[in-house]
Image (cartoon, rainbow over all chains, first blue to last red):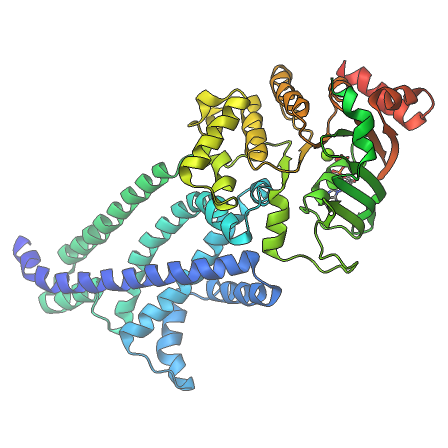
Length: 216
Length: 268
Ligand SMILES: Nc1ncnc2c1ncn2[C@@H]1O[C@H](COP(=O)(O)OP(=O)(O)O)[C@@H](O)[C@H]1O
Ligand SMILES: [Mg+2]
């Protein structure tokens, strides 16, 4: 069994890097886009709010697997042909953006109206109110679900193997295809996913402590 | 001591001039043509039953609430709308500038929980008044000492008692050196034993000539600390004048009499 694992490690290492790349891209892009759209959903003009609301509800209503297949096999019909990696990242990102939008909306909504009013009363403009009063407090509410969502993204990235992207999951399956011994490799895969996510959860707890300025 | 400025104060062009102010929430008319002036250095207290529109009136002055018609001018300048009689809302920067000159202290304190007491006071000084960090810090320490909290400058709001939080709220407002200070039932959320320390700060600001428009249920305090008392009922000014006159008018003004009687029964 040790021998099998040693044999498999180089293959898995490459897959592992792909998994990290997919997860990293999805998380970073969805964070930037999701925060922008989330702020638009809360403060934007009505047409923007409607558009974001419809986008978010639609995406969240579709199983992620369907979304992945739709982007990869469906979009070519309208002339958008993406390779497997790009399609997988796009689909997972759309899904994650919709989640981030909701986290942002919830985080901002949880700040009492009196905070914005006190900020107005000392003469802060809209942008300054967000930057110095609303966002620092909303961040605290936003982080726990978001970091949870990051671990979801790492786990969910395994779905890209279905499009033939050689991520950790796909690499595991390839090795099993050669050695015909599934159990040790799936165990190893589980351990690797677990370690990554355990590290992320620890980070999350550290962040939460750092932002725990409000005594409750 | 305060009484002595009373005669002169009312005769000058008021610093705050509210004329024919009306405001509805949907179908409910909350303010029905309110006229009220506050002269520079004057302390005016608004009393009245719950729901009579006191909070709404104060919020309109700071344009936290839009108003339907009438005008609110501070130093001759319309608060929320570009003058010219139109109803064109002022831009964000202009509004912010006007609000910076109008201090507000809230019933629920509304301190920024992620900032220390000093940082609460410094934020407006830094980002609105453009002071350097050192200047803002010095001003914050000055004002915190003024409200008796020099030693709590680096405490977070969550580490302070309600009375202390409210005093930080006052320091945050007055540090901006506003033309007028608006105080909406600032002791209503406090335990009775903490009310005194906050009122004491208000009293000393009044003695220094700070212009104030306040809402309070502390009738005894209103009587001692204000130049004029305005009694509101049903969105209108039902009685106004020097404290002694307004409180004496209770004998022939039925609404006011009923209000004060209920008050004495429940609060004294
Ligand atoms: N945001 C709002 N939306 C709808 N109605 C409101 C709102 N704020 C206040 N009101 C109503 O306006 C009336 C006056 O309220 P308020 O100004 O708070 O009175 P007071 O401060 O004298 O108790 C009340 O009937 C209240 O229910
Ligand atoms: Mg009120």
